[in-house]
Length: 38
Length: 500
Image (tube, rainbow over all chains, first blue to last red; front, side):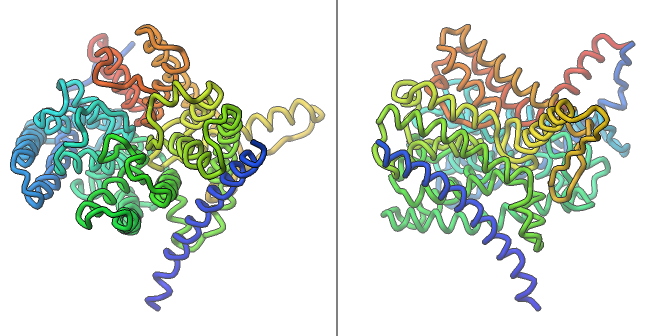
């Protein structure tokens, strides 16, 4: 029961981290493409 | 005809203002504790004096203006705008007493910059500032990021009547939970949970980089408070460049983005509605605008060829962009490099990011993603109306926690606030140009102040004209409160003079 109470915020934090990682990965991809062109 | 405010209005405003100032005085006890732990006696005296001044002023106002009346909307808005001025004046006392600021105006500038989570600094010899004062700089950001009134609502004004009116006045129109005090406490819960995780992560990276444990924890806590509250102060004058660590930069990027998310979104994601992050109009708009503005910046930086390789372009280009877009103001380049090394288009990319900001009900400033999303949808709706047959009914929806049909009542306030921000950016730029700064630099610095960002291209310094300092203080204040409570205060003062 206690585990279920904590699992929602923990998964929530993981989801938010996934969003930030996706944004950084997309930006890094832009950098990678531009650096290959240089 | 303008009605003159009644004595009852002033009493009610004074009473609640007194409560908020008492709350501020009590928060000054935290740096006193830090000073005692760090054995810094002179800084402790500075904070004892400042806390005493705040408590005496607050208690005097509360006693003289004793009131049991509920706040009206006008009174609530005025309490908020005056609270921020009081916080600046009182929060600047320990700064000024430290001797690191040239004048009281400079101390007020940094205090407003802290509370408004801007990050522009006038402090001298920051690298030798005491731990106590340095902690207070970052604590002002943590308090200001949550909202000075939110702090008072959470801890010091239990069950205050009219609390919602003050909460709204602090540019937080979204109520997360039915009770506004519970909403304020939830905002603190999110911040404190991330404070523990973020401080731990940053301290670990700093420790791994060779910093002593105590110092690593101090830097971790300070940088976290400045990053999550999208403030931008840093314990060292070199900002994030001081750490020379890619891992530290990645960690701060993550924290800055988390700080730029809506607290209401945090609530729904933390309570199980995880798909919301991918469907919400704000997160979608943020993703698009970050990548679009970064594309402009990175392509122009690639043209100049100053940053060779993907990693360097990411660490220099994307870092400044995301720092500006989230309204934080951390830098991994020197301010002068914006003006001397970067070409104009790259600077414009960061400038656009700064002007747009993060989510509503977050700690960021500027126009914000919800408004931008609504205005974009409204524009598409209007274009469809022109293209489609006249009899066609064009309906547009947007998703923010739930699906909502787009109406003029959504578009009008979004447009008004956007226009007000654009005016504020432009007005500050004109004053900057009056003092002889180039147009782009003046606009950059003005936008940075008004959008509560803190990135600097070199204009902000203790040597800049006093009028420009006052201009930036007003911009930071009005930008943080999103105008309405500031306009209400101006209206109140006009009514007090001209009213009948």
